[in-house]
Amino acid sequence: MFLEKNINFADYINYLKENNGLIFFHIGIFLLFSAPAISVILILISLLNKKTVKQIKPYEKFWYYPLFFTALFMFTSWMIFELSMNSNSLVIDNELFTESKISFLNWFPFFIFFFRVEIYLSNPQLRKYFGILLVCSSIPILISGFGQEFFKIYGPKEILDGLVIWYQRPNQSGMTGLFNNQNYTGCALGLVLPFVFASLRNSRNNVISFLLSFLILGSTILGIFLTNSRNAWLSIPILFCFLIINKLNLIKYIILSVFSFFLLYLSNLVLIGNKYLDNFQLINITNDPRVQIYLESISYILQRPFFGWGGNGFSSIWNLDPYKQTYFSHSHNIFLELSIQYGLITSIVFSSFIFFILFFSFRKIYILKKKNSEENFLDKVWLTSFLIIINSNLLDILYFDVRISILFWILLAGLKSIISENYVNIEEKIQNY
Image (cartoon, rainbow, N blue to C red):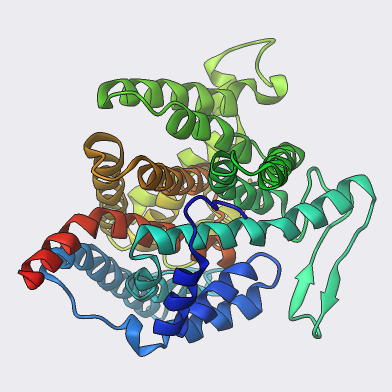
């Protein structure tokens, strides 16, 4: 089926026999988009498997420290803000500053998840199985979305007393499908797009699989455009830069990427919708709501740079201002949001953690290229998908949907596995010797 080249299902059955948790994990991935509540339960069960607990290797300790300090700074910030809320020295409307505990829980459990889930992504074959299931899991998004767009089938559709909900909201500005917002739909389809492209590439020798993969690829691209999400549209040029153009050296990659992202972000602020084409002036750009949000976010950060404003900080301050006419629930940039909630130190440490994983994985995949061409291409797919989800959270914050956050950390854990494979192979050779 998808990504089928060199797939050996006998090996897959052996994987399942060796680690029963893999069964729950893969079923959870298959149901992730269509039934997230059930999926989360199954994935949690998979992580409780004893085989997911492993001894920390010396080469892995480097990756533990940033998340440990990020969690420590987040907890410290949370505690300081909670104490400040009960102090007369800080005059704040307590009813507005809510969800600080919930905000902390959006992050800390995933730090543990990051290291536990890696066992299910620890080699190219397991990552390939994940890709197959992720492509399959996206099909309900397309079915619900096209039903909404072309056949006017609206929701919400519920089963199991609301445990599973497909929203399919009417009168939206873009296709939502089973999500409750078109930006989430666009992000989900965008991050799946590289895996769908890989399925088409690896199905060239099988006519039926090729046609089916081509149908899903075309449907995914159409779905991305129907969401009317500019962030989702950016997934297509990102795919082009990092998968289709794959024979460039590092310098050319950097030049191409910087130039492409400059044009893309410029179009996001200026060209889309022809907002400023008639009278292109800097003042018009600064009046754009997204730019205003970013400028206000920076001012909030400067007021409390070390420990931030606590969970829900941006929304509380923005909506407390009587001069703000539009409601916004976040700062539309995940690193700005972290800085507002928990301070610059937390944001810098976490951003550095992401940057180093991206840097070392890019170096391993595009520069060193120590794998065969098929495995190397799958690694490129993995990195491209993560770049798409990062991009979506730089112009919006889609992380707070549990499906997106789970995939964020799975893709990140997969990149860590790709980086670590050389060390694992060396260790195995030493033991065998």
